[in-house]
Length: 361
Image 1 (spheres, rainbow, N blue to C red):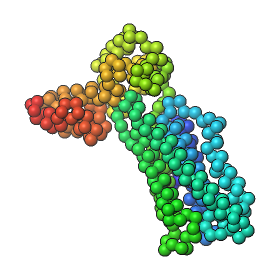
Image 2 (spheres, rainbow, N blue to C red; image 1 turned 90 degrees about the horizontal axis):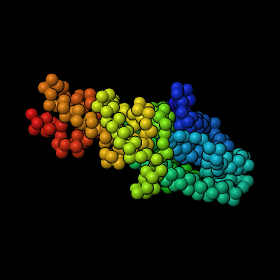
Image 3 (cartoon, rainbow, N blue to C red; image 1 turned 45 degrees about the vertical axis):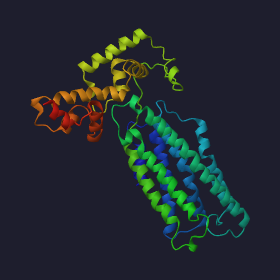
């Protein structure tokens, strides 16, 4: 699964930086699962076992880099990003120094104290890694989710990155579970192999990364519009102090935006983004966000879906569309989710779509 998914990701057209990160992430998962399978088939050696248990040190750095590159409007790989993998390389060199010695299960014959110290350091570092990168990835996803409604007129698992949050929780829980049943203790002391729990979780983990890594689109494609200086999000009162947008320009742009919405009706596109409008009108998306926020007291998501709701309301009262279901009308007006449509409609009108149609007619 990881091999074919990695191949597909590496050969995607167009291919973005987050695709490359996902590809290398999948190859690492493939290496770890292949080594584990090699051992299960009877080709046991301490060197292979040690390497297979150290490889998961790369998973959290890869997850962090993937999250960072997928949500960034200008993703870049920086030379210092290699430092995220330096501890893995150091532990790999240490295992090479021990040679064919048991490091994780049982006792080393030649260096029992050294192996015990290695296990303690590795365990402590691994747990710190889980905590450190989990917090960083969650913060990235949460920051992204707060900004979604300023860029997208719709939501989905691929937009919110909730799938990545699930993968993160699965990975953390599986390894905490492994440590809690005694990762560093001989599995023969238990009625079951404690590693089995993690292998099952890693199988699900690999499948999840493979499936969603292939499906995940890029969230922020380069815009053809001339971009303004991004806003300062540190404080509400200084939100747009660096934008350089004058009130006269804002009113002119607002008029163009409203004319475009009435004439071209882009809100009928269920996957409309602020980039699409910015590219068409050649207005910076940061300016569009500022205008919608300040002049209309809305975000992009609300602004677009207000147009969709008004269109649905017109069709609900038009006898020519009585043969269509309410959901069909919603899809025709740009919604791509029944549940999202129902929630937005009720919030806007105070009634469900069927109640609104019944009362108005």
